[in-house]
Amino acid sequence: MGRRLAAAVHVQHPQTNEWLILQPGEEPDEDLAAIITNPSAWEPDDEEDAGEDSPAPETVPLVKPAPEAEPTPAQEPEAKPRSRTRKQADA
Image 1 (spheres, rainbow, N blue to C red):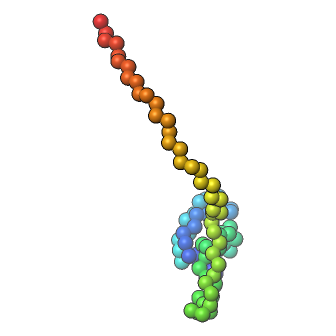
Image 2 (cartoon, rainbow, N blue to C red; image 1 turned 180 degrees about the horizontal axis):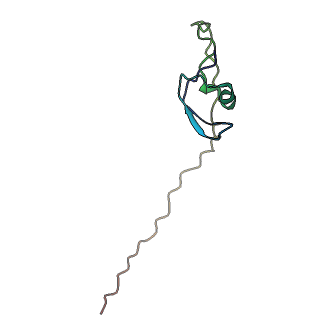
Image 3 (tube, rainbow, N blue to C red; image 1 turned 120 degrees about the vertical axis):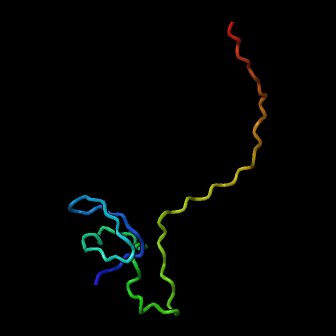
């Protein structure tokens, strides 16, 4: 029995180069499963062994968070005088 997907996955078939959408709960072929490298896409392997006493599995972040920039003091923009121009009337 193959592994089941926990989330929808978009993959390109290795032989036909056709884009496929695999839905949650599907068990993809081995060639397609090898392409799916995100561990969050898969259901847990042993659902029966996972009890309430077992710790939650570690999650792998999909995107590394950007470092926080140091706050800069708020500066008020300088007020520039507004000017208006009039269109010249056609004679």
